Length: 359
Image (cartoon, rainbow, N blue to C red; front, side, top):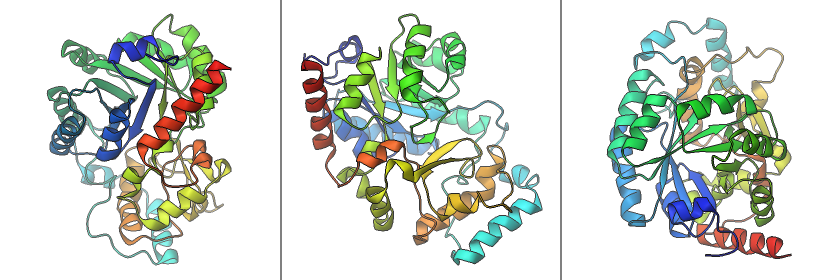
């Protein structure tokens, strides 16, 4: 074991204190095979897809550990009914979205978008949880919400559990859910995120968790960030944005989007509710700009915003409407300047972190 080895590394039997989140099977497997612990974002996958994709990751990593992440927010509808949601979407919002379609001449999508393939609902959550529990996954993480029954079931099945939180006020609820560890996610993080910076957040979460392992997330993009996270009391880091421009991940992306990611600086990300109804950090584009105009309506709550914009977002990706193309990404995107394999990114993280700590 090296100088970066922590108790959490020993617990999982991993070489490096790097947990890597991605929505891509090959990328997740590559993170685990490079000595970290890959975590698959499965929130927008049907249960049968979760079955197949977790099985594929297992095939690729053998007996090495990997995880899965689901978003399980409170207040979602009971049933997977798009019609029930559609009935409550105001005309003002429909007209605004139609205006974006017309202005940018977005072609019709060939089918539902990623956010409208199904409705975020209790019905879908239960089926997704069944798929996760039936899998051989080692870590079950909750990106939003951590229902105690789900956490208890996962622990009964021998899975380690985690909750992502963005504020010290969320610690009590996370501990009450019974999770084995907490991911302290600072505002620099991509996708759904809070308002407190990582440097301020992590020590507060470490202190409040009373010895429960804490991972640092948000803006982790270099070995210096890894070393700093360990100095702040974290036992590992949770990183997502740095994998977006790996060769494994970009193999499935639109070239225009890859170019945007490579060109983006840390200042080129914005937090918007226009994606899902919850605060979401993404690459700035005409999409986020349109929702900041004076005549833009306030985004709806999840899952209403999902249904309002889901098909349009799908059409933007499908037809590669360049002005509107965007991706969830954290401020660490400023360090992603070229396409590199996961193993090379991991090796650089570790070498730099070890050098910093040795000094």
